[in-house]
Image (cartoon, rainbow, N blue to C red; front, side, top):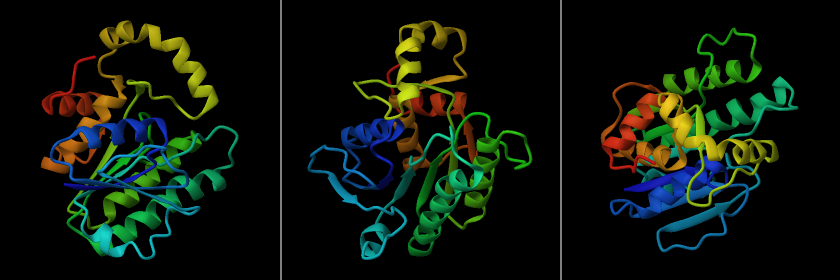
Length: 228
């Protein structure tokens, strides 16, 4: 498989990239983002652009991809709704519209979040914007489009969040992960599970278009993810 990956420098994207590079059936990963991952690998081709939605001159490469994993996102903390929408919704849809025009057979996986508001009318700003983004993606004529809604994500294998407040939270909660995982198995996942679940969607599709944490974990375990 050939995978297009957006947001490979974020916490989720780092985990997804790791699993893609480890997977024997992934021949190539095209990473597109605002900054470089700093990794070198024979499978990895990195494209750094100030605007990740600018896909000019990449049409041939993207047309040959089997799946796109869209992990690019920002925290809504301190952002106006308009600014958050520009990154979360507008950029995502710009990329998705280009990709579906180039390759309708592509399998598109979008990382959303637990609590996303599919009605688009709730009080929580980020949840409304994510809900609109999911709904608009699902209207596009991709062969497969799947929304991932993870809850608490445990970073593994030395992966760290780039957001300071998240790093502080993970430092506090990481030692408690075995307890949280046992007590709330349907609300807790890992970067490894996310990556393996996305690869499962790329290979075989998904049982439904919106996957909550329990569904993500089930797909990952079915694909051979470690239980940790």
